[in-house]
Image 1 (tube, rainbow, N blue to C red):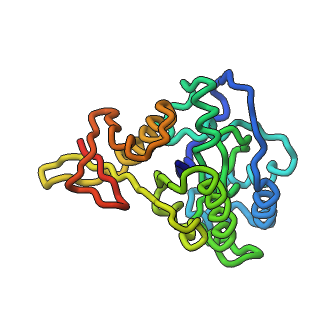
Image 2: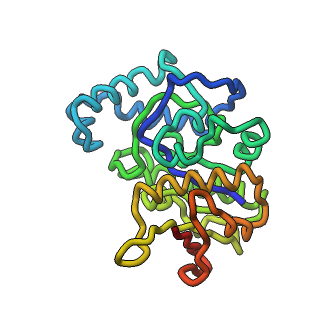
Amino acid sequence: MIIILSPAKLQDFDTPIVIEKTTKPLYEKEAKTLYKSLEGATQNEIAQLMNINPQLASHVYQYIHAFPLNRTPERQAIFAYNGIAYQGLAAKSFDKEDLDFAQKHLVHISGLYGVLRPLDLIKPYRLEMQIPLDNDKGKNLYEFWTETVSKYLAKEMKADDNILINLASKEYFKVVDKKLLPKGHMIITPIFKQQTSKGYKQIVVYAKKARGMMSRYIIKHQLTDVNHIKAFDTEGYTFSEQLSNDREWVFVR
């Protein structure tokens, strides 16, 4: 099965890591093209385009202009991302076998790089998928990346078992064109809910962490049978047959 996961806005290029193995992003040329289209933008224009504050826009401005100069740090994607989902993934504790499995089965969707394998080297960046950035393929990043991302996933799914485990956010899953995926494919989207006084509800912060924990569960157990995902029980989650359907598998706690 192929797992897709969203990137994280928070990134860590400072914490020491011991894993030296790296790979090169498959669509680095496309990433350079996107950032090149932003080189003429002022910090204020970046702030407006990305809907971010001036201080963050200043950092992004520096990322953009340093990107082609090879003067910024690089780190494997799985270790560089540091958001809530990646805290659940806890990749810094992976051993070699875990990373080998992740490299074959985990795909990070990225607004800048398109798709990233866990060990692909990335630089500090910020470019969310929903940003309306004009480019040579259209008026936004979905138009720029949809065909590339979908065909890549199709190739990986064909080489595996034709199953896609969607642990990405809605924002990033929108880049996947199901019509370009292999015939007979299966997409399963795990949903994570908390018990509240009003019944089971999806709470964003917990759902984000659970996506990372589910990815970790699949990787650590090296699962190849999709039904074994239903045994996921990290931090008290259990599979709910009653709330689930063929496309959405619901886990509650």
